[in-house]
Length: 465
Image (tube, rainbow, N blue to C red):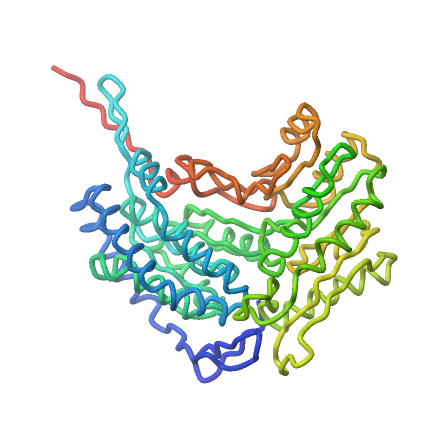
């Protein structure tokens, strides 16, 4: 998808900031053998260990990841470009899971109903196709509940971040029985072979909606269970009563986080007519210029390169199309003048008058662009724009000092997460599920409700004599 080169059976793993080769990673050719090993390891893993014992082993794996954080965080930056500070935050977040494990353990406990007991039973072999934008966190978000539930797991990291995926999986697998957790490297053909294998009982994927639909099609003949976190085009609604400084700060920060390469990145900002011009001024003159573009290994840079030259061309096309069709360029940053050939830096860009019919408005962009659209300020129009102008429904945000208005709008927006005067992802409790509505997801993960997707309930009835 990202145009990652493959040569002599190896992924050519390159740094998007420099174009330099990091490593050559051999593509897995023995997919059937790996699945068979996972299948053979399933029964002893699921039947001879308790949920508590499995969780204790997983905690040891997370301690291992914490111990290598000074190696893992820079590797993330080198492979996919995000600023080192963001990579460090990702690694620190995956290692801090005490409350998470308590909720997970509670979700796996038997429930007694008179003469009936409901237990949780593992599914079997689970395949995780992990993304490149959060290459450590997204593996563990899915692997931890899958393993704790008694499943065996095969992780195929994105071909963009193969070494990060390998390091995370090997760190966790060190404390687990042989073949309970394995890694398979490669492109979409390896993923397709895993999804289509008849011994695989569940597929988890974070990625594009188009890829998710292909996975569902492949999984359908066997009715494999799927948890798919897919694309997004998240709206942010700024009403005229909003705290404009706070809203403008968040509009910029959460459009540009990870260079805009986040499924729940803010990609559509609807600003009430009464405050539109002032808001645009604060965004473009006060906040956007603070985000310097450059190599993520240099701490002063808050926006790294895009993940690949393919992604850079995609974002360039969206921005140029918008300008050609009438969008106004309010601000555009510089990029490193000495950027080497093969790097993929894209300037921080602020555009107003972004409208329907522009690719920047209609499609997922995934780049460091702040896209502003004027609306009347009416509640009904805001809801209709948020819901009807995109097939996606991952996250969203509403900014207003009117609490009743905020609650009304939040309950009507078709999205899995809605932030009121905040960005939901940054403030969600660990007990909450992460859900994509519409074409942003199929199934869901996290929170007790999400953890339960990695096992099946079984009712055992024992009537006393």
